[in-house]
View 1 (cartoon, helix red, strand yellow):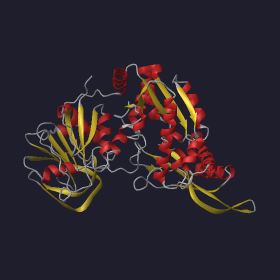
View 2 (cartoon, helix red, strand yellow):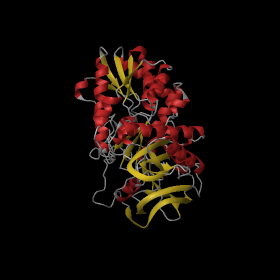
View 3 (tube, helix red, strand yellow):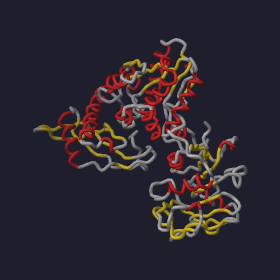
Length: 511
């Protein structure tokens, strides 16, 4: 079945992925492409959205998309930078704003009988984020919306299905943002809302059957949501020809290797568990730099995985749980404006000697969609609700070099923290939680004796996709009990702190 598709051109906004996710929440399929790499097959897309950008249209570094085959030929929605771009280079005028227009605002004027603003009323809250402002509309521009401080907050262009807004409809702070996107995509552009988890499962299973046929596929399971959903999809398509390998890198949570193996067996998957803990610890010996640790862990995993894959005969495919944000974030600044913050070990990390073809059943969908697909497949809600866990595991939650003793300490601390969240009914209210072992010792007193032991930091954040995150205001009583339990029960720790940094500017992990 062919789905109507929306093309989103990325100019580097931190919100670009949010636009795609909001569109998909309307059951409409969307794709993100860099502004300077517009797909050649534009006939596949029924509408186009231009994202915001940290750049200014007035600057020497202004980003210039080639809209020759889009403008006036397809329904076009220009957001923030996109709106300013259409104005500035099409007969209008963009100037620096007297005050940085950032944060909440309210629509003070909506032009009547405009389908773009159907079911949206004056006073509706929107979210501004720009330092320039449109002073004069482009040629044939018609004002359709204002806020108290921004006269040209929304406009359309006569003779085209082109709309432009200086606010962000994709963020939660824009109260009627979803309605606005639906007005544009469904009422104006005429797209069908038929992109659903059920349709994704049906079409992906059919695609996998056709692509893989009777070939054998090997998949490295991590115990996380992505690789698990990928495995169940593949199992549904090719059954016994799927061979799963679950590697214990020695950096998993306490008792996780065996508990996850037991869970997989109950799901009917063909899984082999490989305990390679010592091999990973040896590879990490003496390494302190976070990126070098990631590379050492990634290389060791590939070696172990390759050893196990060679024990299987006639395997032709390697399956990976790559999801859409991995694909987008791994586009370097040279390929598009989105910067790479840290290396993703599961994208493009396959060495030449592993002569296997790649199959990635989830590479087109976001994390929240993966969970919805998993629910459609009947996967245990407890497994689908698991917090994200980094591929390098506790290796990037132990700051500095890694030893077996440090891993033991952090596993014990982490178990107390995570089990406590579950016992207090807090686990499902948190998007991700974990503990960090810091490379500092501090003075303490236990009994009548002076101690000089490790400090651990607890971290719990709320988020929708990990792109932005806020720290969770956990109850004082819970933090007090957790701190006491850790210090009393984990030998080697005498101090516990709680991380109250948001992302950005901090990241969720410490390394």
